Length: 291
Image (cartoon, rainbow, N blue to C red; front, side):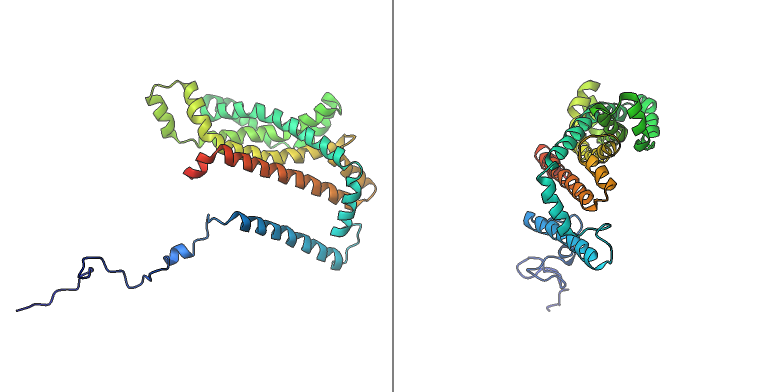
């Protein structure tokens, strides 16, 4: 007598049967709809970025043409482009070079001082207790209020511009570097102690390399802030620079010149930001692979 066997999930060859809701040749629906943290090609990334800029310029042109505003308040893109060409034939390069030199020197001074302090208070609790509250207290003071004080202290020379950049970036840099260091995995530090490494060796061979990618991103972000404070210094006391050009344009109601100066600052900042991104990808390839 042959009895019927219950249905089995395997066929006669012993291979498991596919579930009824799976279609061969197509990825699961969850994978097909994934968008968060997805990757796109470099060509698509560049094309999307260019399209974003084109949309912004198009909206600007439409509002300037049909928004009912005078050219004195909102010049059109073609007027700004014409002024940019005229400015490029005059003082544009000298003004841009002066601003670039100031922001670079001031930012490097701030970074050279902020890195060791941030690493120190991020690793030693006693140092954090002694320094971090003071950093947080000064960080909330508006940097613009220090501008007249810097003029009183050291005059209106180049050092005053560097000091304004330092005040605007140093204290925030210290706290951000501290947070970067605090995010280093504690088990890595414990392994160092287990291997008999000294505090200095753990700091130099484990903590700093582990926090370096995040610290690099911190520097890239604060570089943009340095440009903000540099222009602030040039607005008050300068004989050249893009910020000084904005002051002169405001005095004579040259709105198109103000737009040109802002666009040049944005272009320089974008180039510096992309350069730091490029260098960061080359320096910290291991971090991207491990992400």
